[in-house]
Image (cartoon, rainbow, N blue to C red):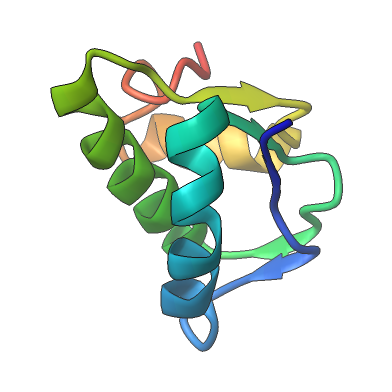
Length: 86
């Protein structure tokens, strides 16, 4: 089982979310985004941090149920392909 993002990921809790999910990500590379409704670019920073942790291990982050807004935001920042959101 992977990690489920909370409903809110923003600048005020991004570091905490990153740390909470880190151990789970290394075990299961899967992140369920279905609960995510209130977020900003900090959510992308968290996802990219997890992706960076997995890269040296030859693993890739897998996002399940990403909201459309997350996909759009990732495209705007030019990282959609790095997160498998294209």
